[in-house]
Image (cartoon, rainbow, N blue to C red; front, side, top):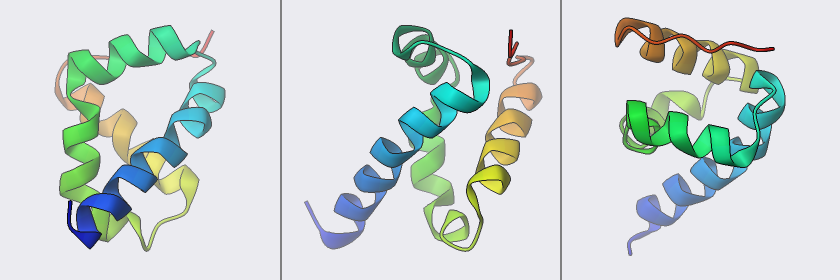
Length: 76
């Protein structure tokens, strides 16, 4: 695993509790969302730009990504 891969993995792991809280989802529900919309791969693709965004910017981008695929995050 090269340095970038380790940094991407760290970002992915860091975002899990942040997204669970923002979206009011359990880790199980979040896992389903991640699998359905291939979120981990998308985080990898966006890693460089995410480094210059705050958490809210990343959350908004991921919501847009899910929306483009016809999905929606219900924050109930």
